[in-house]
Image (cartoon, rainbow, N blue to C red; front, side):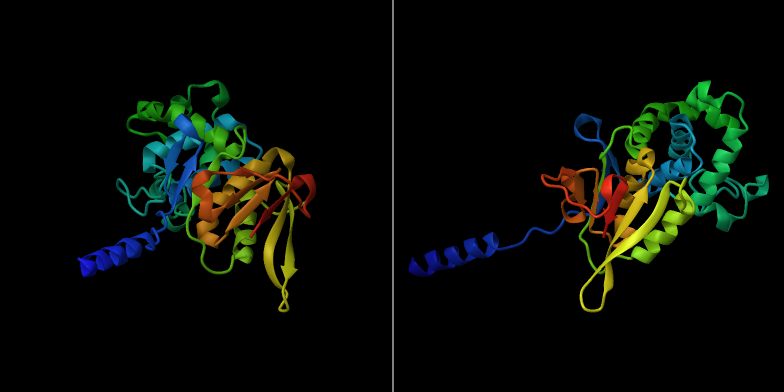
Amino acid sequence: MLVLVAAGYLIYHSFRNVTAPPPAPGCQAGTGVQAIDLDPEQAEVAATIAGVAARHRLPRQAVTIALAAALQESKLHNLDYGDRDSVGIFQQRPSEGWGSATQLQDPVYATTKFYTALAKVHGYTAMPVYQAAQEVQHSADGSAYQQWTDIARQLTGYFTGKSPHNVSCWYTPAGKANLAGVERQIGETFGPGGRKAVVVRITTDRSGQKKSSTTAVLHVRPAAGWTVAGWLVAHAQAYHLSQVRYAGFSWKAASGSMGWQRVSNPTSPSGKTGIVAG
């Protein structure tokens, strides 16, 4: 009996000390009943679509149209296959003059081409979303875009900052943040820095004896601040970012499933227009 009790005690405590495995990486746009679950690639693509629009100062309706098209064509995945020679997030065809297959698998390039074509559609902001998308895509069934209108509008609000601090992802951070990679891709998506740019400039905070960069401070145009912050969170796993802070809120990769948290005593070297990432 004593042996059995002792064995049971040891088994009980061994199970108590087992650490639960971390949740699989994932993302979410919105909260509560309005939340939309996304995988990391889908979040990256949605953030890129919003980011390229911010670069060219396009209206939110343009983002909604692009998201509806991408949801129908690829479910927001960057596909290397498709019908005939179609590839990428919009399933654009090299044979139709959109660009090479390699170019079209770059979401920034593909989105830029989509918006360039959309801008040529007269009155697209007043059209039904599906109709404007069809004017660009020339799909066999243009009405298919209609089913994505509502979710595309929701995602637009989250990724453009109309509904701020509502893009969150989670993963287990490992390794040093690739801040150089972030800076390069920010430039590709949002354009080069400058006084009138989306991201005016990027500075780095350094610490430690080796003076290695530990955080980046992105000085942004306020109107696009949450678009940039959402982009950083959506790309956090790709660039090993563990935290992002902006406008009195903080996001952390390890607890990203809880969303953004209000900072009780926000202190930042970046001022009101800066996003701290690292």
